[in-house]
Structure formats: structure tokens, C-alpha cells
Length: 402
Image 1 (cartoon, helix red, strand yellow):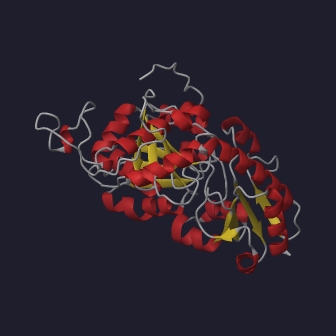
Image 2 (cartoon, helix red, strand yellow):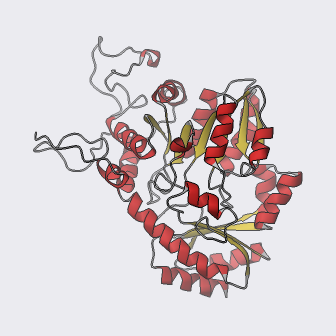
Image 3 (tube, helix red, strand yellow):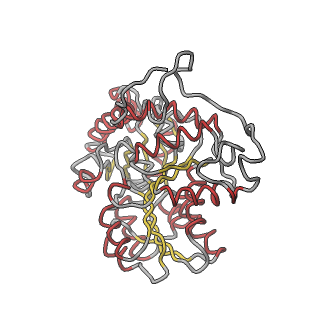
């Protein structure tokens, strides 16, 4: 084995080499996949209960830890500037694990009133069964966040950019509020990725990713992750991972690491293509409003410039008679595909009717509902702009919108 200097200091390099050991003759060049569910052990090596798990414990059972998921976790922690990371079977498993580990009956959660639909439904429908209280607010409004605190508030959860309308929240300002009130802050940064925003550096306690999306990037593996302080992540492993059981499959972890290696290059291309598509859509007579954080026309573009190094590939727009246009686009597009999810190499679009998501997921009323409709009208067309040639993407949209 030859000694080499540690030059793995830049994020682009860390995405490829982070966590790897010194190079030894005969060892594989690629990340190693370990599909084993259990590992050789000894009565003196590991306690049979996960409650006895220590930092120095060897691998024992893959629901507890695995060499492949360990490497992915180390790489994610490096990219987000965290002490440790923990992977889960999906983004929802990561969010659920964090909420149920950090909150108990009688605790209060502040959450973005526009966020991933599954998270909104978890907050509104599931957490109350465990006695966990919540207040959903427009987290782009700092005054609204400040007014939502209670003595029993233990966690704020925001998503920025927010899915599906791409509204932003000021991470540093909300982190300051959280500290002043003795509360933790978690940030779902799935749409931004580690190459767009690093919430921990802005004061957040946890950053969450649906690894299924941009980090995997190929649409062939589900996964989620929470990154933060080591002590908190160790506690999360013992309770939320081991006992709730939402463990990431090692093969999925291996696929996600393959995607992670090209993430910085892909995000540059996603951003470039999104800029071109936004320029085209902004002048289209059939459309009302077009949103992309990288556009000077986005109402929060100055905030985007402060907290995003890459503006991602997500674009949204609204139009009159959205349901009819959605059917037209689904029937006519050939380069874009009408499908859910995001962050793949292929461009996707879908339509989110405002009435449906307001009633079924977000439960918005009064001024919050009015603000949502003012932003996006009767529905949001969400575009995940992929890696195809931008001229082909624009031609496809031009023909489909005609």
C-alpha cells in the first residue's frame, strides 16, 4: 500500500473520493458493494441488543450498519459539512425518523405550509395520533415564523426551494430565530442539493435529502438521508433507523454513490438547461407566471443568490385552463415525459391542481390559501429539466404548447 497526500478537500473531488481509504495493489477501483445482511462476529465483539451499540462496534447486522451505506454516509457528511450522516430507505423514512425521534407527545413542530406532499400529510394526519402538535406557516415570511413559536416548540422544519411552487425560505434568518427560542431547525434541501446550498453552514441543525432525486440522478434507487451533529445522528441511528427499520438497501446505496460522483457536473447542466427553458417560457403567450430561482424575475431572486450557488433544474409555471393544458402537454410532449418525481437525467413535467393539493395535503385556508393561489393560480406545472440538448427541450415545449 502506498501513502498518498490527502487532496480530497474540494466538494467535486469529495463526491468521487470522499471516505475512500489509501489505494492498495489488487483492491477494486470502484466503490465496493457489500450486499451481506450479517457479518462475522464474536461474543465479546458486539452486544446482541442495538441498545448496546457503540461507535467502535464492528458491522453486525445491516439494519444497524453496512460498509456500503457507511461510505455513502461519510461522503454525504463531507459534502454538507456535517459531523455525520444517516441513510434511510426513502426521503419520507428520513423525515419520519427525524420527527419521531426528536418529538414526543406534547411537543410542537413548526413546518412549511408548502412542502413535499407526503411530509405535509405526515404532519397533518399522523403526528397528531402521537400527541405531537404542529403549526404550518408560510416560512418565506419571517414574521409568520416568529409568531408561530410556543414554549413547547422543539423543531422547525422548512423546505427550500419548496415543492412544487419553488418558493424560498431564508435559512439563516430562521436558524437565528430557532437559536433564540432554543429550538432545532431541519432543512429539506432536496431540490437545492449539496452543490446548491449547505444549510448546516447557515445555522441549521439537520439537512435532509431525498437521495432518490438529484443525488441518485438516474431514477433507479430510492433513498433518504439526514446529516447533522454526530451525537444527534448516533441517537437517530439507534432509535429511528434500527427500531423503525427504514434501512437503505446496500445495492440502492451503491447506485446512489454512482450518481453522486457525477452530481456536480449534472447540476451545472441542469441549471444551464433550466435557464434556457425559463427564458423560453417567460415569453410564451399561453403562460401566466414562470418561476425559477435563478431568474431575476423570481420574486426571491436576491435570497436565492445569497443562499444558493447552483439554482437547480426545477422550473414551475402557471397557465389559464391548466387541466386542459396538462392533458395537451401529456399527449404532445416527446422529449419531456409526463411523470412524477424529479432530478433525473430525463426531463419530466406534471401538473399539480391547486384545489387538490390545498385540500388533500397542505390544508390551507384564509390568507395562506389566497397567497398560494396568488403565486400559482389554479395549478402548478412542475418541470424537472433534464440533461437533453436545450434546443430539443425548447422545441418540444414550443410544439406541445402550440
